[in-house]
Length: 556
Image (tube, rainbow, N blue to C red; front, side, top):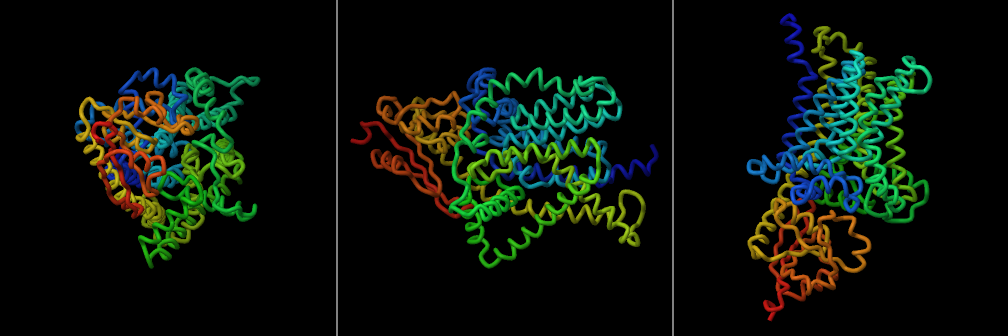
């Protein structure tokens, strides 16, 4: 290999994008605290990991315990160095590897230029970066799907079945992280079957297709049938990916207005950096808090944000149009990938109930990134000739190519900047809560059991005590019938009517902006309390927590 080729590869824009994607992941990982769901990482450390993986029906149906076990493996040796950040180290590492593998695979499966633009979106898409930083399993699934691309491309290049087997193993681990990713394996198997159908007779798949599909069938089918799939399919209409049916809209709009709002809110959520909204009123609350924060700058900021996401969305639709004109197995693969997840997202909202949470169908993202890359590359090919006078060479550093990649990167980075500002607020909130949990641990005796009366307090107590505090959960009779899904099978759940006989001395209640409900307030009024309070900077409201001493002797 001569020096000029080595230099081109060393200074490749692909390398710059990959390094940039890894860098923003590390920065946001350092900035953002773990998501509250990360408390479950401590479950396999407290009990049997095998039992947890085998019997998780009492846990959130679509957050599968394999992610928690993997995260726990990385947590144990790094806790002393990283503290609570060690909970999300696995998420960070697999995401960084995913960026590299996705870039290498997309370039081989499609083209160098498509792979470049597709990697820009894969590297800098805000929701993906922040889900990675917070340790959300959907991000791990996306990352492992990205890893699936490279061995798949090598398999096509060499014709060796073992690479398809490795790619199939990646598809398997993707849906073990997050169950809806199983659809990626299904549509990819269909793609391989169509692509290789001339290599076999009859309807039986040839060896390469079978090698890809084999891991999922051996390990996954029975697990899915008897585990999360059965739970998801038995859920209430509209909540197959969620925790209960709820109306999406504040008002009873007409069908046309409701449809427009539905599409608009979905569009906003896809490009917004946060995890999503349960319903329309939460979107309004967030917009209101941002407007209060920005003041007179809100309107121009909103116009800028909408302009950016419209341009990025335009590239996705340009890619769809370009692919539609082609009749290739790759087109079938990408369109099938998109369609099944669009159906899944809308299926959970049948009857206009569910949630505006596009992250719940986030395994669609790698396909959207490829389509985005096709759209950007198509427009580049169409207009780059007009900039030929500015082209300095035919190599990787032509001025049009460099400018186009730089422009697209800036669009994504402007969206990420919003997530960075919000992350600084979120980190401050989490730090305050962590300090309060530390004070709670100091206030209670080493042999005193602590209790909570809601899932919000339970999650954060376990998480911010690094798995050392496992409160008893006291629920009302009504909550016992409805809310046990929110807790793992390790949770000690009792009726509030039995609180006096439980032997639990302290009850910790942590509540956010909407204040304490009537049941919680009644408990607070019945016992001495140590109060903690701080302002949630991301919303500007006050949160309050109390530690109640339920010992009858201490109240006299």
